[in-house]
Amino acid sequence: MRHFFSFPPNIRKAVRDHVQGAVAEVSPERFAQEPAYVAALLARLEGVAYQGSDGSVVFRATNINSIGRGAAEGWSGADFAITADIRRNDLTVIKAILAQAKLGGLEDLSASERGRLVGQIQNMRHLTRSPKVLLIRELDGRREPMVASGVRITEQAHTGALSLPDYFVRRILTTFDGDTRPDFVAGVQESSLKQLRVFASVQPSSALR
Image (tube, rainbow, N blue to C red; front, side, top):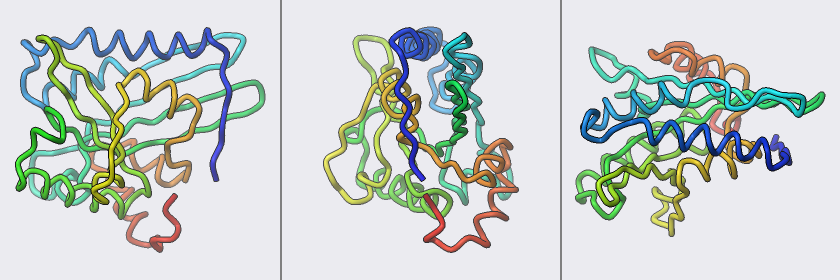
């Protein structure tokens, strides 16, 4: 089931400022490698983006285990998850997205790297219908994270990536993107994704949304 929330400018600005601030605080010089950069970015995205009489927007970030035997990244294909708790008047939507991160743009990936990315996206699609890819581009000595559709990448379709602040305002705040299934949302709250693995194993593919 899809939801669409229309938010006033002050909330959209608060969310944009929250995400832009998180990006600006992570130095490429101090967090050069992808895992360190993503972990630092997630830590800054976590928290209350807006709280007021108009409602509330709260983000939770999960940095998925990538080291050790049976680490969740290996079988899930994901680097991280973002959960958004969005409330407006008497309406509440809690959604989560699953994503893989890559330094650079799609054009920077070798054929083997792109093939590996497609495999990771396919693994994520066993868990959720619309996984995302965070492309961490370099621009004039700074990094500009962009979000692209994993499904469109696997289909080799044109991929119009959005900057991370635009993505949060246009796709997450409006709740166009994200998986509302309670078991999925609960499952991505642990770095091990152990609950999600159990949940996914008993779900028919048609149940993903």
